[in-house]
Length: 156
Image: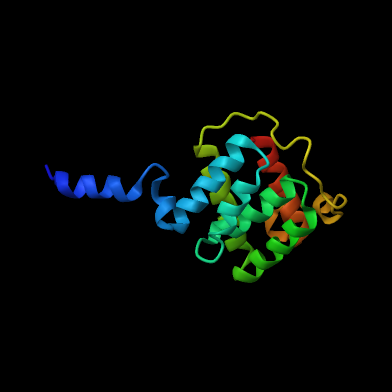
């Protein structure tokens, strides 16, 4: 059995500190911590800032940021992020894959629905094509955002 030498383990614990890997500037850790805060505590500038800090390097962060902005009531800013997200993926299938992975990450946190976003979700009118399409692969960006923001709202 391989073990980490005590000297190395002590150095890792000292460098990581009480804030975990976020203190070292790990963008993935920022994303995960921001997602956890958004899911567990509801609307929070800290959660949005942590997720936003990872958008350049973590593909899931664009989707999560857009979704949580909409869930927090910032529809216009959320849609701007969603449009940037759609420019960063090559196909709608890839966008659905990213979205479903974020939904899976949220579900893996074991959070029970508690209505954290019930009073803050604001959407700029119900998209018409969401009523006419039964497949995620045929939704416009606004309907896509509506669909996933509602799913996240229901989960949190």
